[in-house]
Structures are given as structure tokens and as C-alpha cells.
Amino acid sequence: MILLFVHLVGFALLLGGGVAQLLSDRIRISKPVLWGAIIQLVSGLALAAPLRGGGDAEPDPIKLGVKLLVAAMIFIMVFVPRKRDEVNRGHFIGIITLTVVNAAVAVFWR
Image: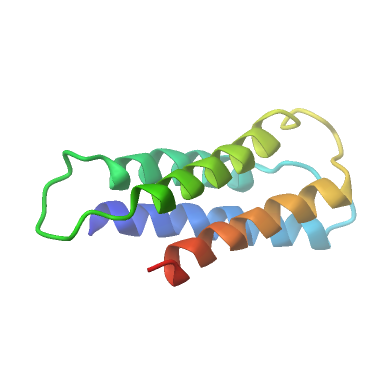
């Protein structure tokens, strides 16, 4: 449960920080966005680890692969331009869109 909570906090940092930056005058990779991407990737890997124990049914490996691919794309899109003074608006819209897609995969893919 704690790991899921940490994962949701990472999502909130990533999405909330991304939307806040998108609405600002100067769009750049802020620390909340960077840390949100890191937390999402690491906690997502930990949640999907086969040795996590528990009685829950194992998640679909294809779903996990899709989520990992999307999370890796988000991380790369956040990590590479993190030191730039400004980031293209379309790039940031891509980060936010992929973040929402990743959440949708988690919720709706059964």
C-alpha cells in the first residue's frame, strides 16, 4: 500500500508540476516534474516486481510492458532537456499527454 501511495505522489508531482509549468510564462523542466518522473519510474518498477509478494493476481505482462515503455518515454522527455532554460510547449504537452495515457492504462486496462 505504501508503495502505491508513493507511486500516486509521483504521478501528482509529474502531472501537477507539468500543468503548472504549461500555464507559466516560461516553460521548463521544474524539480517537481523531474522528481515526479523519477518516482513514477522507480515505484512503478517496484510495484511490478515479481518478488513483491501478496495475494493479488499477477498483472498482465503486456500491460506492464506498455506502462514501462510509456514511463521510460516520459522519463527521457523530462531528463534530457532538464537543464535547458526553456522547453518547447509541444514537448511539454507530450509529457502531460503521456502521463495521462499512463494513468489511463493503469485504470482502464483490465
